[in-house]
Every structure is written in C-alpha cells, then in structure tokens.
Image (cartoon, rainbow, N blue to C red; front, top):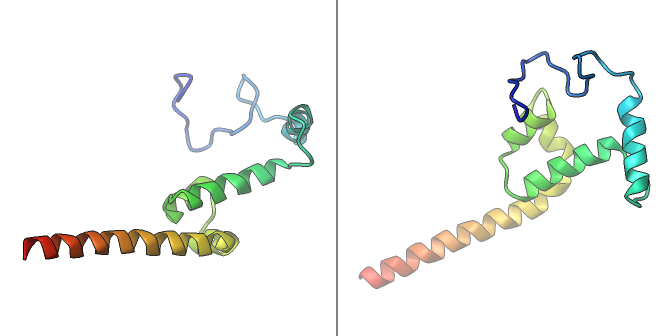
Length: 112
C-alpha cells in the first residue's frame, strides 16, 4: 500500500519486482549481511520477528493483533510462545487498574 499497490491475500512478502518468488536463501543472506554491517552479533531474521512480537505485547498491543501479524492459527499459540512477556503485562494491567480505581475513589470522595 505504501507504494500505491493494494496487497492481495496471496501476495508474497518478499519477491522480485516482477512478483516472482525469490530463491529460498536470498533474504537470509541479505539479512546476515545487514546484521554484520550493523555490527551486531548473530541475530537471525526469526529473532527480529520474535522481538517485534515481544515489543508489541510489552507496549500493550492486544494479543489478537499480534497473533494476526504473526500468522499464528490460534491466539493460544501466540500466548504460549510469548508467555515470558506475560509477567510484565500482568503488572502493567494491575497498575492501570489501580490508577483507574484510585481516580474513581477520589472522584467519589470529592462529590460526597
């Protein structure tokens, strides 16, 4: 969409300008060169995918959105794979709930 073309369901994520599939290792090789050029240690393309999902969840993105972005068949697959992010999510949710509850109590006290 960014280049003016609406993507279809069967469009390739990585393809040639003519819309043909790339050779299987092309993206991995380009990724490895970029990682090396950036001065990073071994960092696989799959690691970037995992980082993307973890950061989305930590920033409060709904797990269903993350599931759809990753293409997981079920939300339970996403939640099982990213359960290590859950403790921080639980604490953040508890803090948000506490803030809302505290605000409501203050409003009640001021109005009575």
